Figure 1 (cartoon, one colour):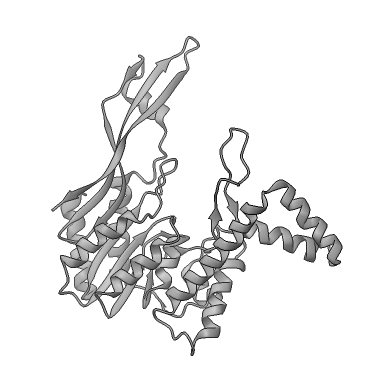
Figure 2 (tube, helix red, strand yellow):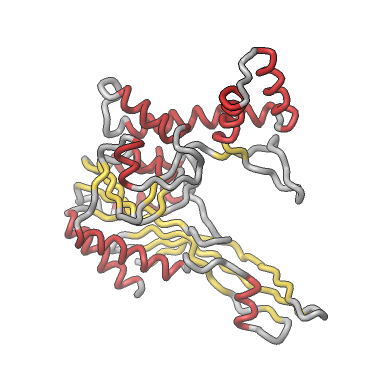
Length: 336
């Protein structure tokens, strides 16, 4: 399949839903994952303006997450142009993608669809570094779990002992990094609440909103926990989850499989294997190749994030191969 077949699938979903279907897919390819980023907003605006006659908008979303400020800007932009905003989740919609779904009137989840906890993993110049000198991300949930471990499992309750335990943590993690953890957690909770208020009453549903935010930021075990549609309803408390009928379910998955094939999402990015496939016996520089990192599409237009690269392979005396990846930058490409 390719672009023309994908446009037919998008059109079929539009006919099924009587809506504008807008897709936003970021690469979840192992070793070549791409995050949701603010540059998507400009592209999505063009697609919406090109279809401003449509009343309902369905965002077909697949991503492992990204910039935590993107969901608010994305949701509020889409809501400028529709009275009903829905999110269709074919597969993964983690972290920032989950936050985006919280801003919808309806969340349509395929049986393979997954949401995820929204506790952030934060990074700043004060974070600890690993053995290679690279900064480590700090999971908000790891910090709160450490404090819970001290109180609940170790049974430490005395104020002086709690201070000692916290000081031990602060000896390992810079206090400003811990402060950033608190700020990021507060921002994540605020963002989730503001997004839920797009379809719920800030006053009438305040208790329900707080419950959902608690479930997503601190009560679902760990950041990578996949939340299926049953859990989303019964444990998270999202009452706007809907199941597609059989025809719609098949359309959702067929469209996902097309993106999966085009972006090689099931094939880990392995420079050595790729180099040997093209130059098995010699040291060489491969021809320039393209990696497709993100797609934003409607049935009339396509924008995709492209990254060009070459592989420089060197055969070593012992028969092994060292491969260096040279990236030539990335840019959005537009197909009318």
